[in-house]
Image (tube, one colour):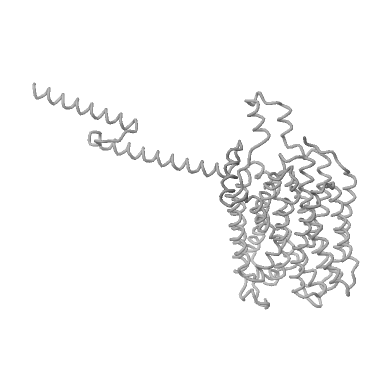
Length: 523
C-alpha cells in the first residue's frame, strides 16, 4: 500500500509540473523541461508557435510594403517622407524624378525614328506599320482613364510600380520578336533576308506596343499629377508642369540618340531596362499620396451617418456630366490628333518626297526639341495670367497653319515645307499638353484630376487612329505598282491627309470659340 501511495504521489507531482510548464508555454514563457510534456504534444506546439511567428512577420512585412506604396489618410507620413528625402539629397526630388519619368515615358513619340527599319526588317506593309503606331498611341491614350483612376485611388507609387513591370515586359517581348524574325544583322541596311512574321509573332508585337503605351501612361500620370498638386496655387505651377511635360516631349530625342548608338537589335531591350529603373526610383522617391475629399469629410464629421450630404455629393466625380467638358474633349481630340498624325508618319513622309534617312533622323530630333520648347514656353506664358482658352485657340491655329503649308507645297519645296510643318506642329502639340492640365484644374478642380485628364486624353487616341488609318489608305492608294509594291513616291502620298487634318484642327478651333470663358465649376 505504501508503494502504491508513493507511486500515486509521484504521478501527481509530475502531472502538476507538466501542467505548470504547459501554462508557461501558453503564456509565452520559455519551455525549460520539454521532457515533462508529452513528446508529440511538445513538438506540435513548438512547430505551431514557430509557424505563427513566421506568419506574423510576413504579414508585418507585407503591411509595411503596402503602406509605403499606398495613399495615406493624414499628412504625417507625407511630411516625414519629404523631410527624409530633403535631408538625403539636400532638396525635394519630386520635380527632378517627375522630369526623369517624363523623359522615359514619351518613347511613343520616337516611333517614327525606327518604324521604317521595323518595316524593312520584319517585311511589313505600310498598313501594318501604321497599325503598330496606332496601337502604341491607343494603349497610351485609351488607357488614361484606367491610369487616372489608379493614380486617384492608389497614388503615384503604385502607378510607378505597375509601369515598371508592364513596360519592361512589353519592350522585352518586342525585343524577342524582332530578333527572332530576321536571318541577317538587323543593324545593316541590307534587309533582303528579312524574316516573315508569323501570326503569333504579329499578335505578340501588337500586344507589346499596346502595353508599352499603356504602361508609359501610368508613369507619366504619376509624374504629372504629383507635380500639379505639389505646385498648385504657386506662381511656378505652369513652369513646373511645363518642365515635366517638356521631358515627356524630349523623350523622342533620347529615342533617336539611343537608336543611333545601339541599333534596332538592342534598342528595345535597352529601353525596357531604362524605363523600369526610373519608375522604380519614382516608386520610392515620390511622397505618399494623401487621400482627400470623401475620407476627410467622414473624419471631419466623425462618422458616415454624420457626414454632410452636400459635401459628399461635391466630391463625387460629376465632370463627365458637363457639356463644356465634352466640348473641350472634342476640341482637344481634333487638334492633338493632328500632332499624332505628323509624329507617327514623319519617317515615311520624308521617304515619299525623296528625302534621305538622315533627314528623317533630323526631323525626329527637331520634332522632339520643338515639342519640348513649346511645353516650356507655354508653361512660362501660362504663369503670366493669360486665359487658358486663349492659349488653346492659339495652339489650334498654329496646328492648322502648319498642316496647310505641306498640303499646298510643290515637289521643289516639299522638303522645306515639311521641316516647317514638323516644327510648328510639334510646338503646338507640346503646348497643348501643358494647357490642358491648367485648363482642367481651373475649371473642374484637382480632386479628380486623374480621371478628368484620363478621359480627355482619349480624344487624341481616337482621332489619331482615324487620321493615321486614313493616311495609310491614301498612301497605299497612290503607290505605283510598276515601281515598288510598298513605297509611295510623290507629294500626292500625303496631300489629302494634310488637308483632312488641317480641316479637323480648324473645327477644333471654331469649337473653342463656342465654349468661351466658361466659369470654373469647382470651389
